Structure formats: structure tokens, C-alpha cells
Length: 256
Image 1 (cartoon, rainbow, N blue to C red):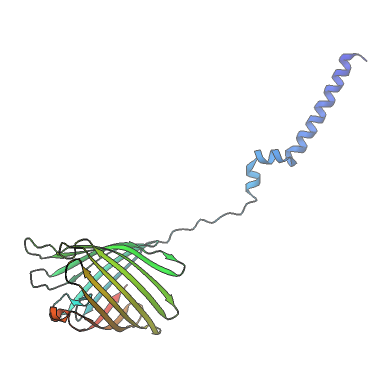
Image 2: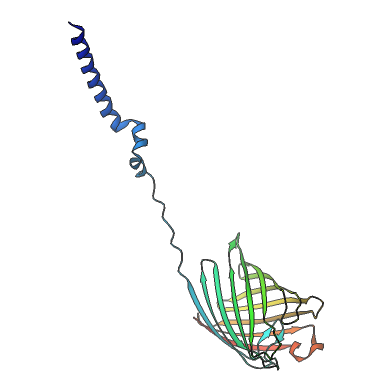
């Protein structure tokens, strides 16, 4: 047998063996599985993508026998009407509202703009945000518009909800001075729809008038849209006039 014939037969055998190995590896070799990644992807479970919740709009209208802000009447002990709208989206919110006031200086309307973030962590609910108090009807040279930052935390334990908040104003309602407000509060659910809420707070104005305030009263939800309430409030600053004295306020709220 000549050398050329022997080489030809060896080459033929090599081609046959190589082809057989190629066919075998195309179905079973790990290297091929790595190249054809789509074959392995079908074995992994599909991870569902959570859709973000849609924005939620809520609207409220409240009528009250007085507008009490931290124990002090803002309507000279007269009736007040409040209206507000709030948009909440994935723990964030923006809100706007308005109410009547009476400061005996031409100011008769207050409007509020607020926003914040409401995360939850280990059974504690937080509210970190701001509120801007604006006023319409102020005489020339008078400005009491105020911006406050706030941080609040609450924890629900059975029928009892405990909370605390801190508010800081850079210039407190025309005083040109910073101020802080601290509050502790609690709400107890007596039966479904009926609650009792109380709070005690301290308003401190830098180098200015500071006082303590407290309130207590029940509220009852007639249904998911209508609620009524009654609140007693007072301060330790009666010497500053009847607006700082005890108040008994009834209210009706309608919300959607």
C-alpha cells in the first residue's frame, strides 16, 4: 500500500470521527449550551414585574363651629369651612386646601399647599414633608405667609395608635423668627367607626411667645364618606385673650 493511499484512508477516518463528535456535542456538550444561551434561559422561572399603583385622588369638605390651630381660634370663635384635595402616589402625596379666617386686619382666606413622603418601616409609619400657609387679603406691608417642615411617626398597637410630630418654621407667621412645634397624640378605637383622640403640643417661638396646648374628643364615621366629631381644646395662655381660651368645636366632614 502506497503512502498516499494510507494517508487518504487515515484522513477519511479522521473526518468520520470528527463528524460523529460534532453531532454528539451539538446535543450534549456544556460548551455548546453556553453558546446557545437561549436553551438554558427557558429553564429559569419568570419574575413578574409589579405594576405601580395608580394615583389616588381624595377630596374633603368640612364644616366646623370654629377653626382651631394649635389651641388658638383662627376665625374669632366663628364658623369655618374647609375644603381640600390630595393626590397620593406610591408613598408620595401633594395636597391643596383652603378655609376662611378672621384676623381683623383684612385677611379673610387661608390656603395651604403641602407635600410629603409616607414610608413605613418595622411597623412604624412616617410622614416627612412640608406645608405652606398662604393668606389672601393682607394689607400693604403685612405678610404672614409661612412655610413649615415636618416629621411625624406613628405606631398602631391593636386599637391604639400612638404618634409624635415635629414642625419647624423658618419665619413664623410674620414674626421674622424661627419656631418649633412638638406634639404627642393618641387615637383609640372604641368600636368600629368610633374613635377617641387626644393630643398635647408645645409651640415655641424663638425669643417670642411660647405656649402649651392640648385637645381631646371623639369622632364617629357614619359611613366611608361622612364623619362627625367633637373636640375640646385649650392652652395655658389665657392671659393672651379669649382666642387662647377653652373651645368646644363640633364638625362634620364629607370625603370622597
